[in-house]
Image (cartoon, rainbow, N blue to C red; front, side, top):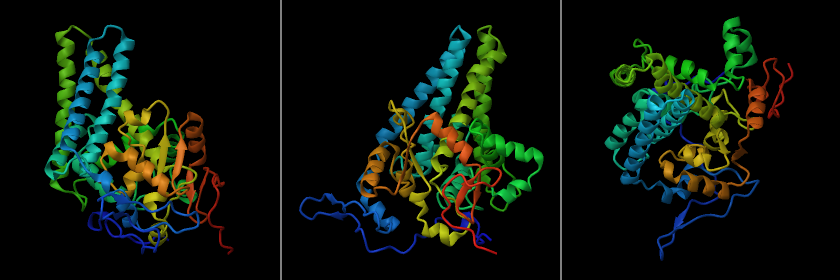
Length: 395
């Protein structure tokens, strides 16, 4: 049985396991003031305490207000330009292409808001909150609800079944107890073709957009943030309708290219990104808190997905995900350096995967359900699709 947990809202982050003696934390040289790093961790050495690993990254946690604001202004300019093309270009294919580009820039803006929510963009907490809310608007993301679900729940309890709800796998028994319609949806979500549908329905609609006001965790700020993004959406749609009448174009056409296509692309993008961050045949889930904490989940439950052609840079380095989970205070413009340093000092400990569509769909075929007894991924029939870490106990 899973270990009972108190509400994530009242627990914050779980304390790390006791620290082993080696390797040492980073030291500061007295004569030069530079940070002296330890040697790479030996293959048979225990993973060091999280505080030790964070000490290696201290020089990379410095934030720049100017850089953060410049990134926000740049991405809003790109968003505006893409929307302009989506409503003014003559051929439909060009309008649709601009709509897709707008959806991609929504993703970039969301990543900026994500850093603001983590207080890692600038050194000013109030400014980070404002930047976060502004950057989240095109993705229709309520800031405070994302803060609770992502910072407290996901980062506090990454891949802990019953608490972390993002792409949490079912067991075969749980799957068999679902209704036929719900089993169909689970198969669709995990087919590899519908990450956007999963995010839109299970995360955004069910948990972020006007969630149950009677819930014990409800706060007035949740409603205010939902009203804020609703107002932005209405203004966005209203602007497109006014443009259609003013330019004698089809209202439905402009709503499609200027709103539906960007938002649907955004949902597909974020669903895909969150899926590949924590789903891999080498990544484990846990249903007991003690075992989860012992596994040092800030390293073992994340994937560093690499791309050709600087695609990762275009996504503000959000795929350098291990570094982000080790220390959320690292700004997005320092994540590439932080990830490189971690992989240098922790060789063989971090899941690094070069992206290909072949790998992605192989993962989707393998990672359907999870067997917590054997600690392995299975298909929908319960057959192991990754190497079991624990043999089942005989009855």
